[in-house]
Length: 86
Image (tube, rainbow, N blue to C red; front, side, top):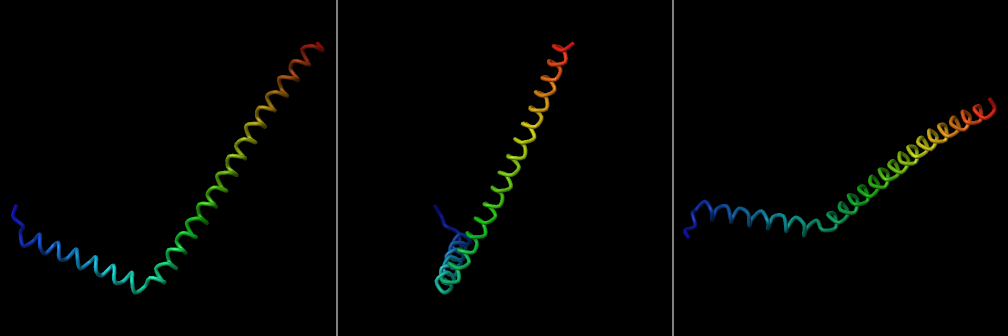
């Protein structure tokens, strides 16, 4: 299997990019950790807010359905009472 000059250049370029990333991460390790902490905290805050929104929406929907069922039940009860009285 022959390796072309282009393959070698790609490999060298990729290796140098990895080294650059590693050096940057090493030099700014504390800053990187602080950023990661902020990202995680931000994600968790948004996740918690969306969970709260979903909880509220679910509760509201259950209340609406219960209200409709009670309304139907009360109307049915009134119709039955009127039929017995008449």
